[in-house]
Length: 428
Image (tube, rainbow, N blue to C red):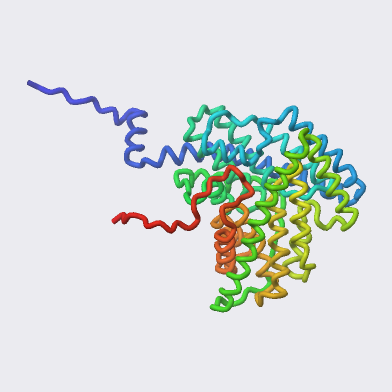
């Protein structure tokens, strides 16, 4: 009896595709995500460029029109009304993105992007103390989510796309694509990295950063003038500085959540919260001046080369916490850069390391402690300041991360124990 052989479909397109996928299982995965990341990365990079240009415009207008700061309570009321009546479902911002990565149920509405853009530019135009990372991440997440809906991606792929979108938003707004990629992988779940998203995260972050550069949007450059040799004494000094950075990071995270809760508890109508916060910030500017509002980039740059008042970081903490906990829009990261850099500058009075190095260490280490993203912050330090400071930056970030405890500026972040003292079974 003859037995018929199965037909050979290797010469057909589906047959060849199946054969390629069996021999090279990552081929279709890479091709698929390269297409997706190219499109979303280009869109997110363009959105970041538009946002950065808008932010520069708002800052320039405010600096030549100081009287605008007195209208901050009015601007806060407008932002509060916008979110209260039209944006409640997207008001949780970065926490909503993190929650969706953990449990992708309802889709994030696109209105998150224009709402946070308008709210952040308004906050900066009228003198609030806020950053830009929150806006970039929310715009990126909203764009990525619409693309996932258009392509009808499953829950697993939606998670990967949101992670890559966050990476693209972070990398493009700061000009640090490597740090952006790791930030997207690291921020939502502390203790584990989602390695199946590593290619989309890096591809999106790099493409978005390149597109932002193509729009000729410039990022601030920082320089550490002197980096000492690595010695036991200098390592000890770096550890001591890292301890200070971690304590301040934890204090910032706990205080901003406490103040936000107080605003909610004592002011029932949400649009009135930024009115009160705006009045406090405006009064602070009248008493102290405009040094601690906005992004504070000029002060950050000064901290690398010029001795600054040792209380700069404290006042920036106060202005930022009041602004953001009251309901104004923006991010915490650039204010954390300010806080860390000026704290490092202040530590140079006591710690025998170069002022610029301490400012650079604090720049990323306070951020690492407040967001529990030490790997991303180490890479950011290397991208911004050069590899020569890598050991000192790494020590400061790791120590700050460990000392900050189980606190974070992102309430929805899942944090596993940073130090597990229980014995693990042998895997051998």
